Amino acid sequence: MTRDSGHEARYRAIAADLAAKIRAGHYAPGEALPSQRDLSASYGVTLMTLRQALRQLSDEGLISQQAGRGTFVSPPHLTYQLGSLQSFVDDLRKQGHEVRTVVVGQSLHRIPARVATQLRTAPGETALRLERVREFAGRPAIHQVSWIRRPSAERVRDVDFTTVSLYAALADGGVAVARASEKIRPGLLDPAIASHLGEPGGSPVLLSDRVTYTLDATAVVADRATILGSMMEIRTDRAATGLSLTWGASS
Image (cartoon, rainbow, N blue to C red; front, top):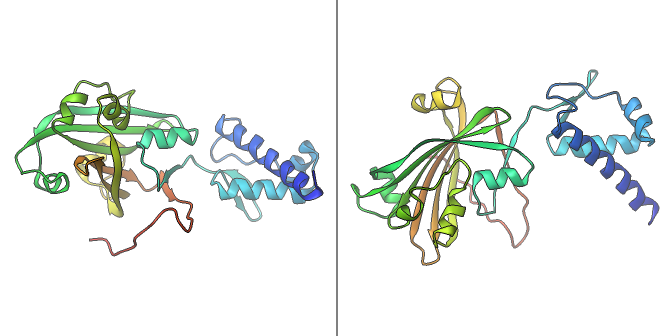
């Protein structure tokens, strides 16, 4: 191992250890970490190595460094990863977060005009309306309404969605999803949804509209997720042949 690779291994190991302690609650949100000198001494490394570890934690959003005050544990924050086709819960659990799902409603309803356009169905047809609230770090963070068109709706109608993701239920029902299109824009919290998220109406939110398609390009699910702006950030890794993003004015 070269000197540079050994140095990198040390600061990454320190970052991993501190991250594990933060996620385990050893250091609570808002709590100050020990001083840099104390941390460098406890890990047996130089201040430079310790600072690189803290820089990595800062880049990951786990800590914030405040000039003249010290280093503090950041409030828990959801990261919404673009570029992968999976449920919110699957996405967040992969990041090591515990997410609780509360099912608010799960029954057949007439499809509203906006959703009928997304699903390419006639207004007035019925679909399974699935309304859920996602709780993270002990508080509601996401309100989500999913419309599942027939005949797929019958295959997942009686699933317990407190423990099973919609995509997993569809797969178990023999419905193979191939891709999804999604538009995310800033918005204000609808008063009708505010009570579910425990925030006043008009609070800043992110609105996600996602349409999921099967292998034969049939639109099978239309989602509207309302995400508290104080609980979520969007992060993505870009590559020359990877994720494609289109920027435009929100309507």
